Length: 338
Image 1 (cartoon, rainbow, N blue to C red):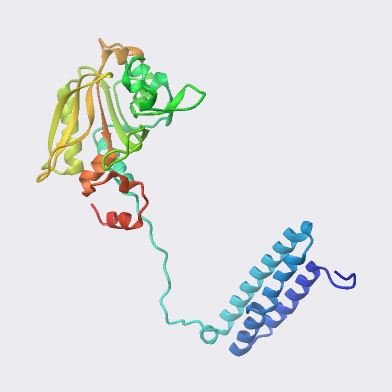
Image 2 (cartoon, rainbow, N blue to C red; image 1 turned 45 degrees about the horizontal axis):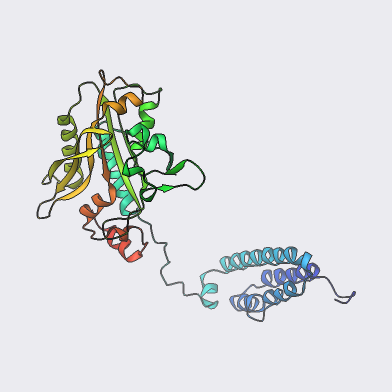
């Protein structure tokens, strides 16, 4: 650059002064349109300033770029101000069709799994269950040991869990871990009822009904003299509220290390077949003892529900993968589902 030539910042200042003067001096629609073209047009003074950015020294590029952006914002605001002063006729002369309706933003909607989770938590809240949560990265004590799952149990195999490399932690495989944290919390005194919604992780083979990440809601009740009758009554009330009065509920004998007796939960809606939606049972005395509760005094029941399966049944979805593919067509279809 020649020593007699102004620097880029001085050029930007000079162009800004001329542009401001031109815009403020536009007192008619025609003169404002001319000013807009000479400043903002393809060959206008503002686009020409971008050449300064390309030729500026490396240590000056940031300052030059910021100065151009600040000037552009200022001039756009000044143009809008002058347009407002001259009225609607000015907008029409500048090529704006003021008769067109405004373009509104599209209102978002809750994801169907979020809606399902909130509904389950709401219904359980009406039954006295307080929502709580816990970490998604867990230690083996909370994920296995305290749940009465021995070291040689297949559920602890590396191929069935997402263990973290180099540390004794894993992505939780169930929200039952929150039940353990709740029962070990000395600030809580039984009786109590809690529910724990959240994500869990298992390296399942992905297909229409399985995914490596899914959502659960666990329920836990600790009190004196609870029985399977209390568990079944709770589940009937829950599923009738979620899926309608016409549903049937079946508790199918099963085995879980942390409950005894245990049962799979199956539901059937009118006109449809049975679907397994979770597991349940009476809290095993060994689990109560592991968290410091006297099994001779306290009893409890617990259940865990898969939110994806509930949502599939509620909304008529046939492939679990649709919930995580972020296909707007699917999500828009779900907006009207109830």
